[in-house]
Image 1 (cartoon, helix red, strand yellow):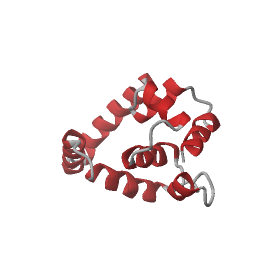
Image 2 (spheres, rainbow, N blue to C red):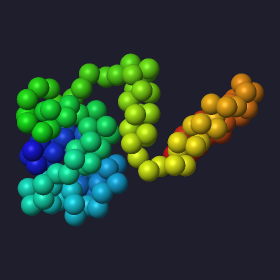
Image 3 (spheres, rainbow, N blue to C red):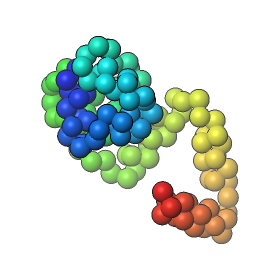
Image 4 (tube, helix red, strand yellow):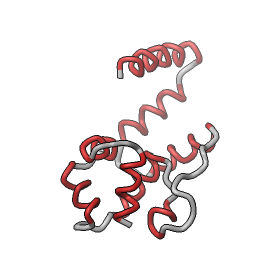
Length: 121
């Protein structure tokens, strides 16, 4: 499994540091995973699959395609919400709840702010 982990990083064209940043890991952790010194945790496996759209069965066993087919927008939303529900990220959960309570004019203000933030990032 560690070799497949490393293969994903290389396929993405990322250094260990860049890969670590995308997964909220330390560079040393990625290095240890790369060489097989450390066994991948279930959380890291889930994060790799979510962030890079990797087929979990392939990562765990080598069976199937490396990547999942691209998701339709509706399915992506369902998966992201399901992932969020399983986290301790209360701020994001509350943000989404409050956003959904807004009227259309208020939502438009938030959309404009988010577009500006996205352009800045």
